[in-house]
Length: 272
Image 1 (cartoon, rainbow, N blue to C red):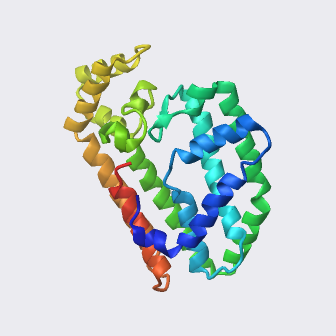
Image 2: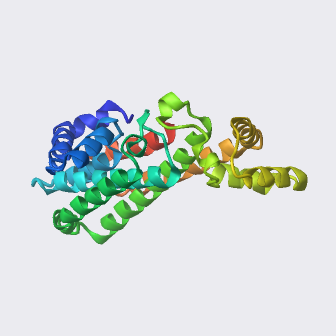
Image 3: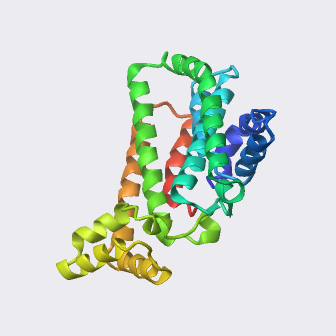
């Protein structure tokens, strides 16, 4: 998790977000409430709400719509997780059983759709927040947009790397999940680009099998490590994290800016 110093700045707002996330699931439909509560209670870093709240605080926003915006972002993220687990036939998410493994695929998709719909109903509030932020100078808007883009790239690169190197307990989902689903992410892309013809052919033939055994997954993970795939991805993640921090250089000093800078370090250093 990010440093507690980051959370301390928006602790009250995050508590409001957490309460509103569960309040918003009082749909009156038991299965929607049960599935939604299951995935929300299973944890999650609330990283997207955190960044939204920090940016709102940076601009001295005094209203309540930033809470709605933060909730909308988390609902959208949660909905994509529900749908992804159905498509990928996932069984573990954030260290707990996935919703689809408990309630079935159709129910998970239904609840994901509900969360999408609820999120879209909050877009008017999100637009109002955007209009408030739009009063900032254009170069500041561009700086924050670039910050978010580079932060997101760094976050995703580390997510791809953790699929190879994290512990299942710490990561909250099965290790090697991307490999088992034949998802070719940057660690493997880099490795394939640098393998000799025969070894590359062997890896590709292995990936083309209908099912990858645990032994084959472990073999590919070791190969990616030995060929420098881990180091390559970490280097790229640090590059984008550095770019994100550079995007904030022109912004005036403040506790919120420091927290955004620390968030850029967190995405690279995290273990889950």
